[in-house]
Image 1 (cartoon, each protein chain N blue to C red):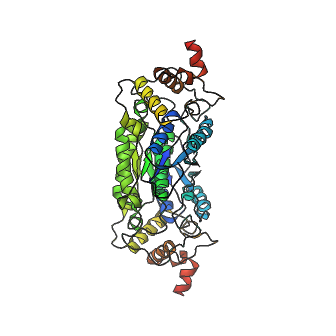
Image 2 (spheres, chains in turn purple, orange):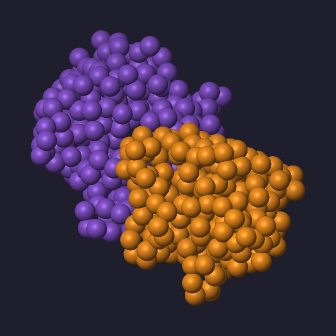
Length: 241
Length: 241
């Protein structure tokens, strides 16, 4: 699993959460020498960066952390301490307050820049159907438009060897509900050997996951559905008991 | 020229060079309350950031500097001290070694993020025809693709009030040669009151502009053509004498 010469290369955007960690595992399984890329963007939950480092090391991937303080622009509950992280569920078509203006556009741009510099074939993303019911910058038409831009934007793209944006979780699932989609992701995570207990999905910045924010709730439900309640938060386990 | 309430707002990507300083002047002239945005991205010529601050203050614009070290990815003479900055002219269709992988894509993404956070109508860019003969991420079709992405990417875009990417220098000029295009930009700079002597275009990181890199040479030629040889580099003035 080392960065052997001659292996095809990929950049994997790695938040340290369940989804992107699963995608890293899938990319490694598919034979890519991976550089995992994380961002310190002003998020309150920087614990995810330590978890990302651990997950990257687990999969033998190089890990880079880039500082880009778009959180200082304000406007999101993920970066603004004065805003409340929601705990009352997500609603289709409504953009939640945890939306960070332009975050994915910035992160993918940096991923493409790194991909061009290290001659990587793909930029892997954890984007999936659970996200794109709420966040505009997670939908398939958004990704397609980004691919068009990327092919025009880069020296590599002009030369026909530009990086391909790849969101395997968006392609993978045919599940009908968000809960089932997330459970499918958990099953894939288990299949590729993700250290699920290391991954961090919580929107809050505490010592352990809160168990009540929307992200924790969706994840706990999926873990239980996939037959692994032992990996759920302490909060969810107390509810089950 | 203060950030008066009720004024329409704009983000202006400001490198501190002649082109982006001119665009800031045009945006202020057109009645926008401007936030100028500069980047510390690992460039060897960080003097441009000081110049950007001075130009922003001159026009009464707020100034923000964002750290994003894409220069650490390597691959460009602008950020890699071991590479040589070219001094032998630019060639149409050939991407110069001063190209920074994905730089404009990253900068525009951050500009759009800020625009959404502060509810700005436009993101102004200094991109023009002199650049896009060489850099892929300066061409009109690139900008059009970015607008499509931006409208899909953001909460504001979905709500029909997304920021419009605006490159007035690309629209302005009908000149037939690069030298004439750049001279037109100089004339516009003079018309909107850009402190040209403050702006920094040199690719090198010295105390004063080198006068021999491609950027200095194009600028000097334009200043002379526009009847302001007094604003050219010391090197160009010595050549003239």
